[in-house]
Image 1 (cartoon, rainbow, N blue to C red):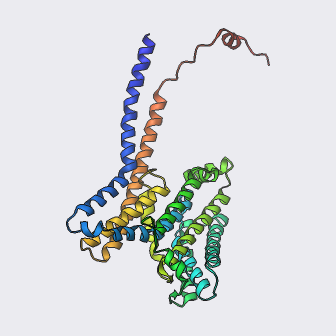
Image 2 (image 1 turned 60 degrees about the horizontal axis):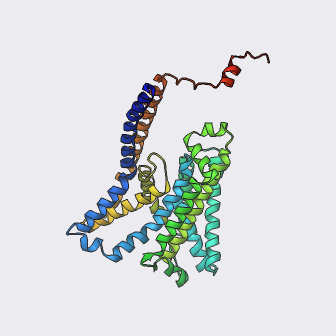
Image 3 (image 1 turned 30 degrees about the vertical axis):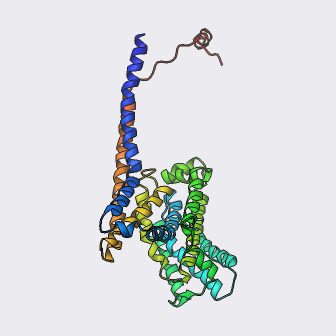
Length: 370
């Protein structure tokens, strides 16, 4: 009876810390979504912005315009899960953008074939990244920064700095039309994000990518094909970036060799913001989507409040710095908690062995002569 009482007491004592921890985790997980809701409510209620911000055309504009940025950011998440940066995603989107527009306008290809050409060119750029990072084992940050610069130069050379216009009207209209009152590009973003999320979270390769991101050396020791999976992550990133390029072609009605690269830093800021929510401390798809629209809503609302053009770049830069700082501090806090938990575990005396039955007791008492 006494043992039962003590067990119950210990369970009650241990339940309280777990409850407190779960509340803290809920706040940590939902912090950015709550902030997004507060932003939306503020701009909808503020006298200077409520009429413009809450207008249906403005909301449609936010959802549609951020779809390309969202796809670029989702593309960036895939290799980041394994611990590797891909800074070339925006340039790959630009490459696919120019390739699709050129295939349609300059070479007269049909829309499906032109999109296949754009995706193929984007995958070729992803294969280059895969070779540099997974094959030659170069630093991912430096290698993809070099690829970003290289592709930007190639686009300037191929287009001679001029835009390409004249894609078929049906394809050009697709990016500006709505379905059930919601822009079609937003549906595309959600579908691609859901596929990437499922692939990363619910497939063996996705879980192995997370294991690589946690500890690459340990992943190699347990037999995970690190180089192959890292290469696949860069190919997957290039595929999603190429889809972003196709959508950009549709929304622009053509291609501009300089536009796509402007999506890099907003996407990067959203990725790091996303790492502070949903799955704090880990790069994740849905947190990134929330980060994209948090930045978009804030900039849109500040514009209606009369903010000047430089505010957008300043806000994106500040958000990136704050997101990195918050992610780093949260990671350090989790490490300290883990160390304290290990120390507490070491201090706990080992549990007594369960009472053996008669047969088990006899077996343990019998000496082994093997």
